[in-house]
Image (cartoon, rainbow, N blue to C red; front, side):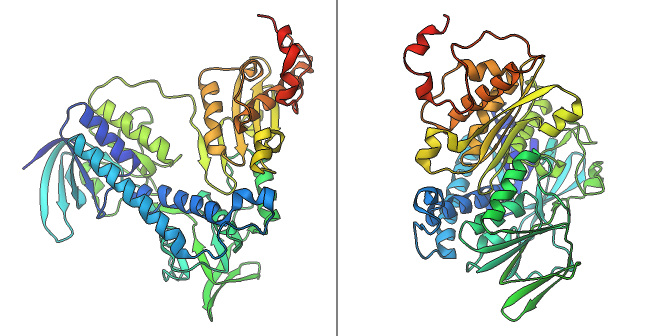
Length: 495
């Protein structure tokens, strides 16, 4: 019977990172993947496919150019589902190839099989053709992820009534789409299809959505959705879903009926623990099927078995899952762990994007911290004008007492890229002075940090409780342009 130093169940972001890290330590590693190809949900049905579809839609529809050329502008007049699938399959093939090469060069063993525990140190692996082998392991990482929830009262058919795995393999583009569930996945797909000028209705039984995001950001985002014609049906519960001719009729509990030719059910996800026989390994799960872990080490209730990624719950991001996998592997083999960063960036790949890092304004208020905000509308930047950006903004939150940046929040073009500036400043303990006293490339959207910093500086300077700062050579203003800061004025700045 073969023995491994580490067995990783699942080859998504958490699993692959744990496997590679352990292999770098010179350990004998096996990755068990139930699917036919490596990559897990992230590569095949989740992160990569949805973001690829988003990018394809924005390019083919000419969405990014409509600020200049009008809402009727199109890069391609007739866009079909095959246009979207063509690019998607190329990207997925490349991702799998890269992952296979990474495993090969690091000497990682892999097998396509379903795994289930026989004990805390033994697994049974069953391949697609029914062959079963048993292996021993010293340590294991469970990274099996999640799958879409499929309630019994929803008549899924894989064509007109779909879950979020099936939506990436559609054969035609609908004229009207109803999305049930205003979580991250539902809102992302609602806005992606809306960018194709498809009529979209978004339904959720909650009266608000994306509650973890700063409310001012959501307010602006909601306005943009309604301005584009997306219908929001919040606080509405679905009573019935049934086919009606060539369409699908969704009936709400308030009596309203929504007719469309396609329905996406994106309300909730469930864990992939079925068949693992976790109880045989002494591993407990919570009422939602998630595996509780030590947040510092990622150990489960069985010390030699770890869990990482979506299977352990929030934040369920590919980026954080990768880091969790690395932490698990480091702890498993007694390697020094770096300090956990103070905060991490969160990205929602809607159209437009939403991204944030640190505290929201509501959290700052709840904590009782005296604060001030600085804001820059992306259209205030020259780069924004060049790109035709006419919406979206950056919001920075600073503590009045220490001047430290507490949170950065962005809605608009490039938000998930821009947020890393705020992340660095927060984790390094930076203050408003960084944005006021440093130079940003011009013209860039990143210059929005300078403008928002100046806006906050003005507001803080006007506050009687504000701690004295060395004054700038001229009174800054949130709408100052780089031209205002050029020329002789720069010579007056003290060395």
